[in-house]
Image (cartoon, rainbow, N blue to C red):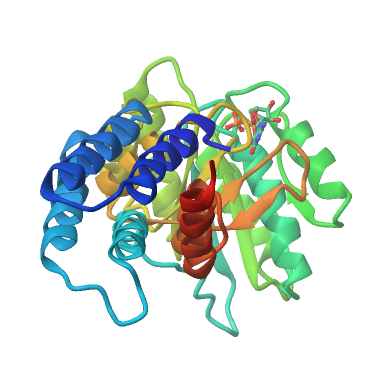
Length: 312
Ligand code: GDP
């Protein structure tokens, strides 16, 4: 996952832990290395500068706590700042006694339909009752794909193969599910139209008939900075409350997803890590950074720092 970012960051850390002593020049060099690594991964320039400014200032000015060497402390600061960039861990806040409605947004090919089915199964496993509405009337096969994927987890998918009016389908679907004891209804929407403005107009209508509790933006982790504009356009139409990043198992750079998060102010909640239905993980900024740096948590990062130091 995110191999080049991982390697570049680890090389940067290696330089620090292998140095004979820490001075300003070395801290500046670390800052430059981290900048390069993040920019190559498509992280937004402004964000990169913010992080490395903090990294430099804290590395120069902070006194390490007792028991922590200066080098380890700098590694920890890097870890902290990267985790901060990714925000806080968040989860669904479903209200009991009502049908919580989620709208899935995202461009075609982002993995929206797959994520809808994955999320339905994930929530079922947590004990929620779930219904799905298939309202992508633009992409041929979207409804069949959704039904096939949801069938295995016994989730009912409401759809109307011969109706092209997706807000109408959503309205009918909500009515269909109205009397059922469902905790969550997930609505899969189209990701493409002939013109972007038609797509956004359709989302606006779906938003109106749904009155959603949460709109989730699905972002393809392999695309770069154009995520920012995409996310912004959706966000202006329906306020995005959460983000799911897909395809982090492939050659994803990941920075685009961070850009989307910045554009909407929404948190990354889950990540897709494969094509199978169970390949969905809750997103934890600290664990994610731990993985980027090659380790699970901060203790492990410090252990890694020690090991790299002793490596020949
Ligand atoms: P939609 O047009 O946004 O509904 O996209 P789909 O759900 O049809 O997904 C587009 C393609 O991406 C499909 O071939 C999926 O199997 C694939 N895909 C979706 N999520 C992931 C993921 O997390 N990892 C990988 N490797 N492929 C994914």
